[in-house]
Length: 412
Image (cartoon, rainbow, N blue to C red; front, side, top):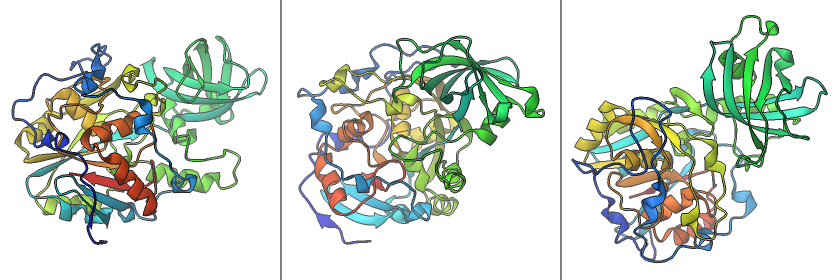
């Protein structure tokens, strides 16, 4: 560890009040628990910012990041990533390694992890009729007509728009997608048009079903700031790296199109060390959707809306939250799921949008990576850490690596 460094107070008088989880949480915000997946979210879930005392501007969440600070590959070992420890009450920063996290927690803390698994949902193929190149990012499975035929919403990218009736083939023809609803007015966060397609395993699949073909031929949908050229001769090597390192070691429930990146730094040994130190471990699931890449375009961030995402808080996790001395959320996805559900058990969807002024009810501390300027993830961090800008500037000066494959912060 590098020595603790005094710094200006982080302006956390209100944010520190997050504290431990309440034993009887208030009614969930921006979420509707349900026994049936797909229930529509409640309206007005952006109320996380309703208590803000001053107007918000998008520029309030901007900062300068040199391009070389954007990590393109992960640290050699997961727990060798750096960890910036932010003590809000003491107003100090300390530079550590992520593997030192157990020393920063105390018996009775509960670390909550997101066990979603990233789908290999990016497919590269060509139009059956013309051979034109097509990229599909499968974002949401709509239904399945057995293991060999599934209907998906996808983001399609091609030289010309994808139209109903077009057939796109992948994996040498083993997998085919028929466009049912073409790209019209709606576009995805990366600019590709949103389409609905039916995926079918063909006779050339040698008995493999759609899921097996996706696993074999799909690529993990890395965020756009991680450069991966499909024509790069290193593709097999990089693809193998990403398939391992863009998943958490505890990923169990497939459904995400982006990783819960704060969890990428944990190893089995580190989880064991936490348990050995008397720190509780629990999991929930929030399947990260493509909206995580959607930029905020309104000058007033409160006008932005998040796409609903599916979550599930198991009963055992809810009981652990109620009994915890302090709840430590690993990542913004866990923070949103716990705040949306009030820590209660149940499945549903949430579009909870956490902005400065949010009254934290469950989460008392946060492990998180460094986020993009003007992003909703940074706004969530700012609600816990009003002095985030000074901390980010220190991280830039100190050579921290940013974004998904970068380093992490522990905010307590």
